[in-house]
Image (cartoon, rainbow, N blue to C red):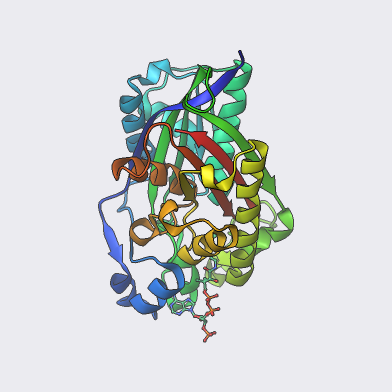
Length: 337
Ligand code: COA
């Protein structure tokens, strides 16, 4: 029997500071009504300095390890997805490794796939577990957006959308005797199309320029994320719908067989459009965007965690996950929980 991946522990961490739409409206030209109608977001969590991405990852990872009943010394690998690293290099997985006290020598890698980061990271872990390279992997999605947003009238189209947070799972190799009952990751599906790269990106700093970072870039606001909202919206609905269909077809599972859909949380309207397109009843779609906004690589593990806490996700259920984000990147996976 070939080894498969199974989630044995899950954790999440949201920083305590709540930022409501009204809080933002007091600072910039926006309103609770506009944000709620267009996105479904009511509030988000933002860190306070000196909290970093690896700090959020540490909290979520500690809880995930506890819930799996293992310690940092039991890990064979750390895979961390983020678009908001502590530093340009080395990767945030290395900072997490040191803070979590994962033994020296254990490999730690970053995945830079933005809102699809956790699906990519899970797929990476799945491959290593299937081949026997590793037996137990910590997979993390963590983001600190708030320190890098343009919280001014000019940046309002982007800054209202994002929150800070982290989620983590422990994935272990497992033998699956009965695929319809034994918990495991059935399949993962990954895609990208770099033609959309500049529709959602952070132009600077970067080695594409004469100098990595210049005062002119700071003055011009190139150090803030830029987005073509319409293009992101249209592509997200199309690609996430395709990705859901792909994972169902790969496993010969009818859409009715799925008990819960945990989608990336970019915009409630995107998830409603995907559900409508595929004929998914709204009660099967688990959303957290109203409370936590878009936490990029962290939305999926936070969603799974919250679904478990609220009793919406129970052992034995079939869960479909899909995400879309900057790159463009998109992907899906199907899990027997
Ligand atoms: N508050 C108030 N008004 C705002 C605003 C804000 N925070 N942000 C933008 N606006 C204004 C714009 O200035 C524009 O005004 P104008 O018509 O006078 O020029 C108007 O709202 C934009 O309206 P519209 O283009 O109709 O908005 P929309 O329905 O396309 O919604 C988004 C905008 C950003 C919510 C939507 O495009 C979206 O969700 N896109 C995907 C974004 C996303 O998910 N990103 C992350 C992907 S992982």
